[in-house]
Length: 143
Image (tube, rainbow, N blue to C red):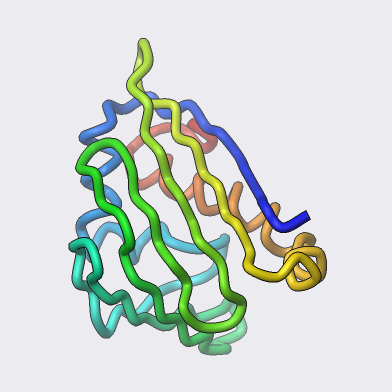
């Protein structure tokens, strides 16, 4: 297994969801699992743009991250390549549906053995990430 996928219905239009992604200040508030905060050093939100940031864990541990925005299709799709370990590609697709957006989150790790080793962290963290996005959008936790 090298792919982690989840889908979430959000009671907000795709443009509202995308706005919470493209705005560095808003993204910093919700990105990552529960208890984490972010410090963005570089945020070039354009295809080929760099995203260099640190995630700070609840215990104060700093986790450096470097990514590039591979694809940006406004209000529809975003692909992020994580350049440091662990290597993965994250695709976020926003599908308009009655009552809001169906968000498709797919994280593909380059190395299946690494994916297996971090599955116990990644699976709940991805759900927490989307819970935090829901809160940022002013929605009830979970959608």
